Amino acid sequence: MKKAAEMVKARRLAAKLSVRQLALQAKLSSTYLHRFESGKLDSPPSEAALLRLAQVLGIALDELLVAAGRIPDDVVVTLLQHPDLLAGVREEGRRREIEALIERKGQ
Image (cartoon, rainbow, N blue to C red; front, side, top):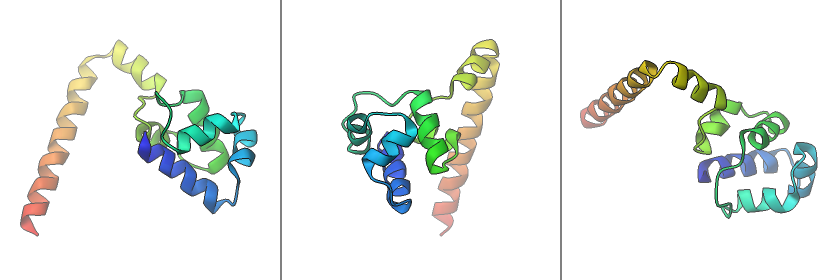
């Protein structure tokens, strides 16, 4: 979640928006947004809150969701309907980890 908060704060500052201005545009409370950016939330923001932030700041929603440690709701539904897909995702993740290790050892 820290990565998502840093991403939002960096984009907000680049857009020269105050916490209050962004909160207004994203229809969030400024207290909530400040707590998010400060890493003081107990759990990741909802997908709806992240969607509004992504729209205002021009961040890809999937990138923000993953950075916040959330699995997009539509992906959860798909995995529930097709649990066999999860094995393929895990396999791809392992393959990429191995390739990264090989690349680092070769440098």
